[in-house]
Image 1 (cartoon, one colour):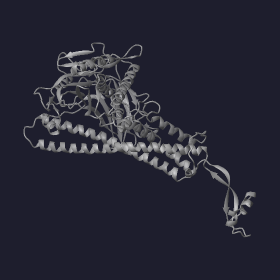
Image 2 (image 1 turned 90 degrees about the vertical axis):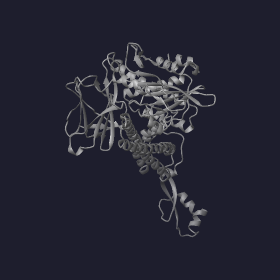
Image 3 (image 1 turned 90 degrees about the horizontal axis):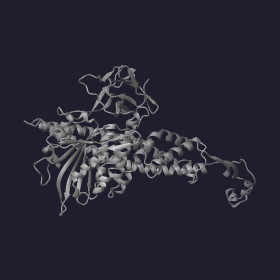
Length: 633
């Protein structure tokens, strides 16, 4: 039975029970670093009874530590996304996720979610699709594709508008190095097989040649003429007794067009792999340092926790603050460790392929072969396949073909929406004449494709009058921790991590900066009716109003909260007003609608840009008309 992964059968089974009788088996999973959009993902409908079985059929396949982790759209008290985790069993026990009881909440909204399996030290992923009641399949897939392409386009525009990027960063942002590594990983077995086969049995041509030998074999007229040449007389010491003979032989010749072409390919390929190894090695070292810093931070948090536990009358918010910070660091460590191990695996296999090519070029028949620039007809399958693999690898590189990725890591719908909101805000600033001025700590394009734009990502944008600091998913501590860590903002509330926070600083004549205010955007992939009630305060309303309580710790600090406005960006198809005011909050329906003719119309983008414009102030915008007009496009 089992589950397939790249044509290999894994012994575990995953069966989703949906509705009252329907069972849906997961047929394929993918290595977690290379999960792609499945052609026919398992489809679930909102609100139906749902359970899952995760089991093996034979005792020898059992792994006590194996688990299955299921993403949801729910959040816990620390505002962290919940996952549902079950252990592997030896029988087909159904774990009920949702049974449609009165006290239960269906754990998913419209879109795609990841399902990750940890089995015997390896991680596998697939996805399932939750279908809404008010959109058909084509509409949902159109919106998914639109969001992905829109965000990717904004990221490229944002990054390449930054003229201050170093040459190295500019090259890395093209992203082809990582795609190249994934491509080579997928084809490493074929490459090694064909290279080894070439070394053992290369194509050669027999050609006539002559060889000096003490043993007489086949001779001809040229052999007799040789005996009377200076060389022949010298070898036989001019005597009548022949010591050496000039025999006619057949010799293998490797220096012909097919091998010449292959030597050219291998030489260029060797150079490409060397460049990729060099770039990934630098990233590998950076990730290694980041892990060390996170471990040190976690150790300090533990010391702080131990100290707090010995003190009296410690505020609950202080304890919650430490708990949440530890959870965040643990998640970051897990994420970076996965990246570290993946890069380590890439480097190991790339170096192995690189070494084999170097050996083949220098220590085999290729040492006798010239390089050729004209591609001949490749009739031998080994030469043909190596040529195909090489040519496809070239398409991945920058400026070769389009910028399509070789593999796109599949992102859940809610995650794409969160990124969409972030980059719509950044793009609005760019359209208003602001330039990205900080060199980003991470490769933003690769991070986006890997579905792991780091929490706390920082973007600095400015024009001639003001500077705006944009923070993505940054955790803000309480006053004492913030002061200790040199942070400029703190909040006494439990909800400390808004999706997007913008800080506005006005440039002064003496070169200093004067802090003005903040504005907060929070992305919610939910219906408005699920977040707001006219009869009572919802948990979402409480969370969002808490974001009003941010204080500034810098110079000329005010004693009041500094957040001018909290705006909730929510994603769902809506026929009502795009913008709703529910004091003290503003709700904007930022979401693409699929029209009857199949075209996509974006709701809410203009309203978002107007809010940004209003907050910054007309006198601080250099391209006022650009900000508003372009939002209509």
